[in-house]
Length: 473
Image: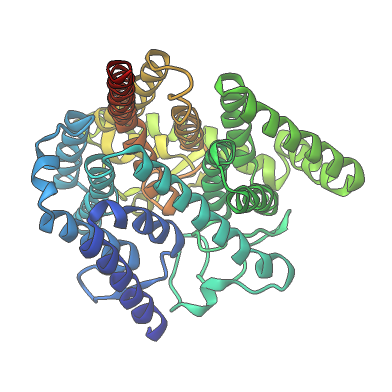
């Protein structure tokens, strides 16, 4: 408990020092760093009410800084991107909560969704007012994930996890502070995240951003840090032993390679060549990856059973909603899945579903068809709007949108593999990335207009100076 209190005091002090001296915009990168870094275990329990997590303290402090800023009134007048989608999401979750089979659980989930995620989206969509701040936020995310990757080193090689320093907390699958040991894959690193797949998902979203920052970096020290970050990110992803994040990373890197500029492509190609060299020098790495792939196709193996389980979830969700009644519209309530004790038949045998390894299946069961469609529409709108903005902007200035699109695609893909939408730091990262993706186009246009005005002023001054010289002659 002393550790958590000390962390909270330090975090509040840093955010207030940055925000009160320089405005909330200067505090947002630090806020992003803290939101991504600290685990769920970093919290103070208030029995019967709610948990005071470090992430929630960060959000509350940032909201307070926003309210105290004179510029916040101007920012508040600007339209929030996808505001109607967010409004519909909040309203429908409230409807689903009102009809929940576990009202208290669903009500806490509703409050958590608004404070832990929607409030984060609001802050980064409203108060990132220039591209310098947007890039600083992305750099802070990369730095935080790099730090988490370093914390995974003793987990992989010394069988010690940083979460053991925090008060113990029960998760759905394990007790915090213990190593995550898979029957088929051994120790799987999770660092400060609640599960190896969550850590892997965050890495799959972060690596494309790191490549973009590397290509645009000017200082040698920054470039060295980003190169080191990319390599330790790849190492951490391998050590998570998670198949889904590897596929998500492949998807995001394909997007990055196809649409990015030549500099980013060359750096990405260099990393791919180095990866091929590592696979040649260390054939055990390739054999491990090949064994995981083969086991996935074997329904009798642990990995194969886990893979088939995800498909069975969709059948289960449709079966539950097809029982009739209004449950098909609003579901059974947010976070209610684990209280339904659902069973279904798989390969002729009855099976209990103790976990929901798919956010889309969870949305169907917990918020019904309407709640599911609202989230799908939110994801679709964010991707389409960002893609359209990329095509309309000059290629040189619109490059920042490519890693953001790649990260959104990686997150959306992982929603089919794990309950990722309302659990973990990577969910916070999704809302930050979506906010930056939707606001960056306007910030880029504003920046380009400012540069043109400055260039025009310089040209006018040069012309006037030349005319003065001619007149003197």
